[in-house]
Amino acid sequence: MAANNKLILVLLSLLPLIIYSTAATSSKDYDTKAYVDSWCRTTLYPNLCVRSMSRYVRSRAMQNPRDLARFALKASLFRAKYTKTFLLKEVKNLETLKPHSYALIHDCLTQIRDSVNQLSLAIAELDRVNRIGRKSQEDLDWHINNLQTWTSTALTDAETCVSQFPGRRMSKLKATIKGKVKNVEETTSNALAFIEHYAAARYRARRP
Image (tube, rainbow, N blue to C red; front, side):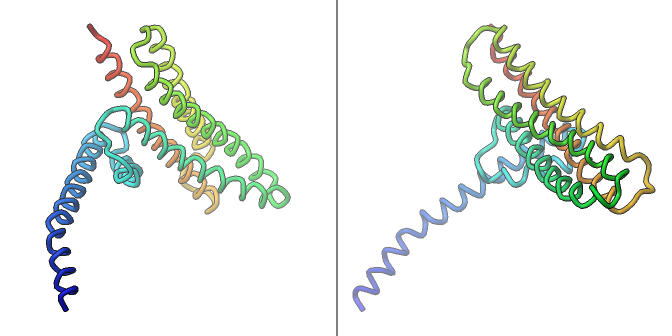
């Protein structure tokens, strides 16, 4: 009985710490969400931005432009990889059944494969930019230009694929593909907006 009472007292003594820790975490999550939401409103696709970034809000605090750019790129890469996997499956199904559709979707797959590569390069480049510290302006310009170029190329790849499915009247499969690739296009557009914001912040930080 005495042991049980002692255990209860210990648990009661820890309760304020548990409540404080939970409240602090909730406050941190709220602040991060508010920060992300505010910047998402500056993009072309704010609702998609909030949805695609929500999975990363709890992974760490996003309180600076680099975090926003990196997680936006990761969100875009995630959608591009998912779409590539879907297209690979459909291309295999169509190769012998519908040659015309096969050629169209295979071209789209080529574009999305390139998007995946470009976005992967962009994420790696962003990490390198963060490591260069106070190197010369020329070095910073070169890395930022690479980051912008690779992300812009990924966006162009997705836009090219979407343009192959004009209008609204199309098969269910083509409509599904168009929707998935459009999602890649829009998340990449949002990522590019955050990269421009990050680049501006880096340049401001280097001013004397």
